[in-house]
Image (cartoon, rainbow, N blue to C red; front, side, top):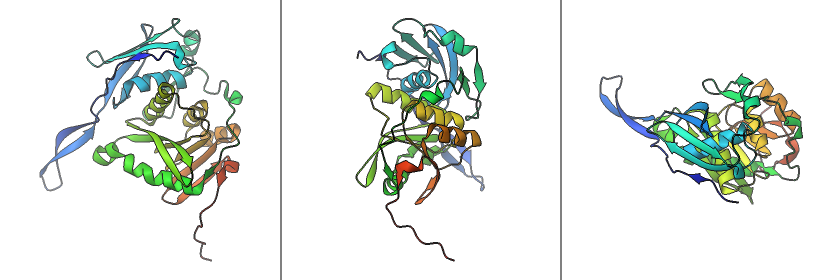
Length: 281
């Protein structure tokens, strides 16, 4: 595989501003960055994303992947980000994706942070997705992942106003975080991880995806498209997200915090190994 030529144009995650507390004292305060980045594919304007800007190239690649506008990283020749023009120019090896015109005619405003947009049919090809059934996640590994995520949320701890997503593997008693990305929108963080997976040739078929955001239909579909069988969130879920998770057979866990979780679908892959306190009568 010839990797695409990409820039390394990450932006600072936080900025300092002056704020005044309840006593009228000036307190230097960190706030999260937010930048408009317009994606162009083969010189055609596609969409403008509002992003933290830490991993713009991976975000652009993951956006194309999760929107099903390209089928593989091999189709992408270059990703060039220029913050002076707030533009990301994506060049494909064979011209614009054949399905681009058709997909752009059908837009769905999603329940993502702000107003997300999905091109094409949200449910297209969903029944063709096959997730591995021979992989397992123990609750001990799950608790290990939940504990580790707290140590990675550096931007959230400093400035708030961001979501975090992680890709992890599980071996032995512990989970290992392979990728962790924070962004002002949870879908940006998902897409950036999808892009990094393609760039690093990471197979998702035995991995765990963790998000601080809610489990909506779009989140479940994106996770499934990456071939990931485990989806974990410390937040809640929507009915459509739940319906699709059961339809796909993904192992979905919500309200995951500390040593607590709710198993919502795909229970055959989860193995309970740790002792839990018995509820009082």
